[in-house]
Length: 62
Image: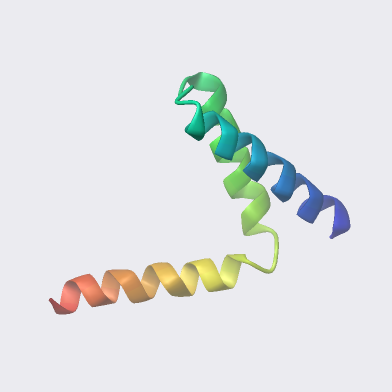
């Protein structure tokens, strides 16, 4: 668990700097995908899923 959280933080930081510097290429896409996979294996996965579901339902109710 500690290694997964560390990798999520590392990939999130790298992705943040890639997006900020507008360096959006194949490397940034790979980092984003890996960040997503590692994020899905942490405790943050359920709140992210709940938030996405709430947003989709709110848009549908408009």
